[in-house]
Length: 93
Image 1: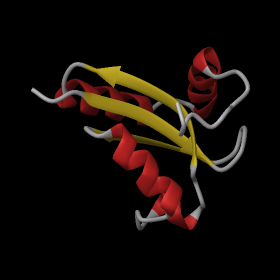
Image 2 (image 1 turned 180 degrees about the horizontal axis):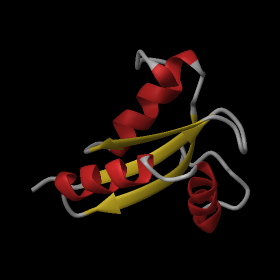
Image 3 (image 1 turned 180 degrees about the vertical axis):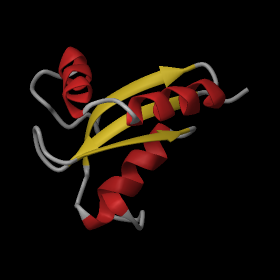
């Protein structure tokens, strides 16, 4: 069974947030960075990867993504800051 990732991208610290899910974090991060993905993230220029969370299976990741998308913005900011207090771009890591 393939693993899964939940991630958050933004345009700047405390900026617009997008929560997503993928089975290939490296590819998805590049797609956001390159502007290859049509839709919300491209329209708002969300390229900075500020949060990633690994899961054993894609089904677990999808479940977590759906839950996280319903969270209040303040909770998402706390989640980001718990692992990335400087809002550094995690793309290269």
